[in-house]
Picture (cartoon, rainbow, N blue to C red):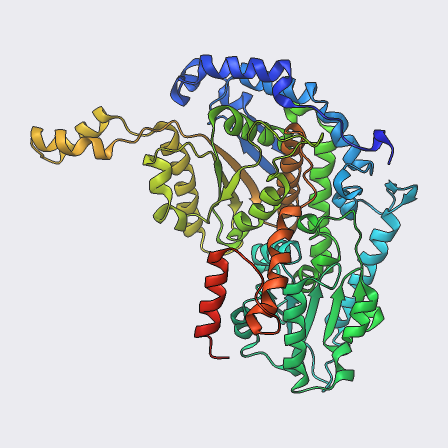
Length: 555
């Protein structure tokens, strides 16, 4: 591999801008959001940005003009623009796996040229996309029938990780755009309860299974796939499997051996990371659910954000700005987590999806030079849809002891007719951001309690419990409406935010070796649990747990 194909090594803490940021933090850390707004009448205009059908207000952050200038200096000093171009141009930036990182090629227009090892991959992408559309059209036309001649009504995606989280998030988010006669289901967990619950009530004659596994060897996916096939074979025969199972995989041999027709195997490539794969053939369940034209709108929204990210200077670049704000809080304020709070029930899987996208990418402790990092990398992502979240963990956000930056997301126009509900939803979203910023002082609390007729002693006793410190940073992202296009832009926005943070932290964001150790040990333990092999010498705790499990189990 040519040295020019990989990312250069830059320990961010050794840069001049990092040191200046640290000095700036020490000098400004006691300044409140109220102070910032009082000092800058143009703050909202200065710290807001509109891109296409998306508006970002980041003015409620613990930043000023100097903060952002220093963060942009950091991006320049580590040569971020060069790193972005390397990714888009197909350089082998995934050094540990000797691969390019080209999920952006999955939504490139047909005439584009993106080369990997001298070959333009865009025609391959569009060949598979055309094959997917042809496949889905058979259900549009009613020409695909199950083994008994009935039309397929239920589609079960069997995958895990990126082969599940992205598709399930998008299918949930775009439920108003679903085909009325198609139901899409998802099975990921190796826990038999997940498959059993999903199959309950389904008809083998009208069900099609989508087996999503690049290698066709993923233990969770293939265990579920074989059990699904056993369930199907109680009604159909082995030769009928090809009418009810398709594969999203690069392992054609294994898929054919399973019983899947060669024509119904949809490929993708090793330069597509699992958690970035929903715009590849892994998105088959999405296309089935929302149709080919809406799927193309999803890709168009992703490509629009890709173009913005690649071609826009950092100080007007939405993914770069979000990434730099995250670094400011993680590495200078010591914040360990950030909350993603979509005020749209259809986006209730978004935080879970971003957990994998971010934490599997940037949960690394070795830098690009093979050295242990001496600074924090990655953030713990969590969250839930508003307003449910307001009645669960917002207490901690408002009056807890931790600094937790929050992203609020709100579509301006809902995908339903209950407009008064949506006005209340929007009011709650804006109010929470305002309350997290301003809080409520002790004087304000005492004034309110006096109005309730309490005695001075009662007021003094109760007031401390009702004080809100405020000064909690938030971003507000407004979408004109949650559509396939804007959802695509939103997904790409966070994908690129993750890349920027990993690049500045000087880590490789596109491998996931941390996923593998526990799975490898599980393969050794399973035959010990079933009695097929003798127990090996594990630690005392593991030996005791296996022994107790075998003692108690009834099968």
